Length: 156
Image (cartoon, rainbow, N blue to C red; front, side):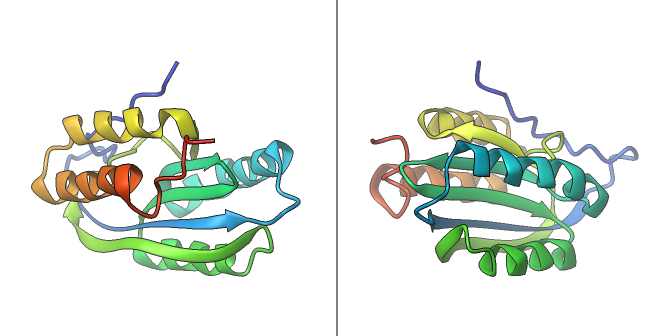
């Protein structure tokens, strides 16, 4: 079963938040396997709620794809850790924005999505996104999955 992202902000008073969002992809180091990915997720489940970071992680075909959203400083610190992590080669930033908007993955401190399911998850998030900027970012990600840098995900 594919998890369904919610497009409503989890913020109690429904005041939109200034969120920093980044997406990246990287090649996994040769020794990265499912057990290594599970360790990454376990660390994220412990750390991300404390930092206010939500998002998703896809691993397939030797490629990591991750969507992160939260406070700018926390996301920037996490990206610095990722860039220094030997499990990632060639980290490429695909998009970065900072704006007042809803969280696309408010309940996901870091959810693993299979490479085969990423198109469906992003399409569901696109359908549920309440603002034009989020929809545009998700459209760009879907285009990358079909014809761009992420086209190897789910194919192999």
